Image 1: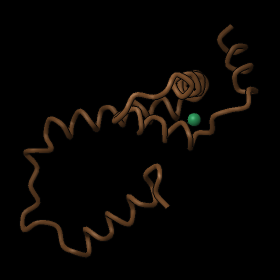
Image 2 (image 1 turned 180 degrees about the vertical axis):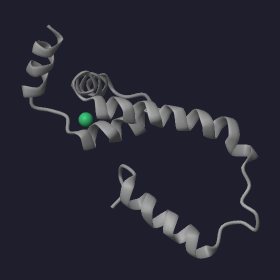
Image 3 (image 1 turned 135 degrees about the vertical axis):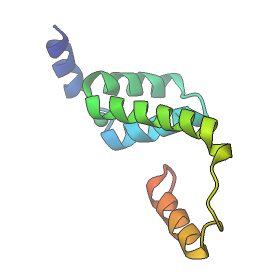
Image 4 (image 1 turned 90 degrees about the horizontal axis):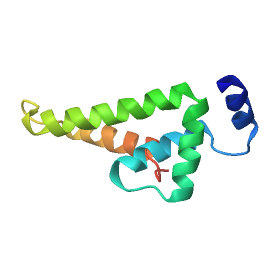
Length: 97
Ligand SMILES: [Zn+2]
């Protein structure tokens, strides 16, 4: 029965994995709109990869909240490293280039 339901959902026009991951990241910071929640939920019913990704995001956030303030980089990050991180975030985060 679940396979039949999953197959039906997969034929619906809608959310790509890229959009689903963007919504997973957005959901960490702000509540999703009702429409976004329905799209996200339906996609997660049929896509194990995005379900796992969302779980990993939540886990990483919990770890950073717990351990982030305790982390230190001896000598700090180099200017080059900071620029590389900034450039990568601009490419990979929702709303980036
Ligand atoms: Zn997906």
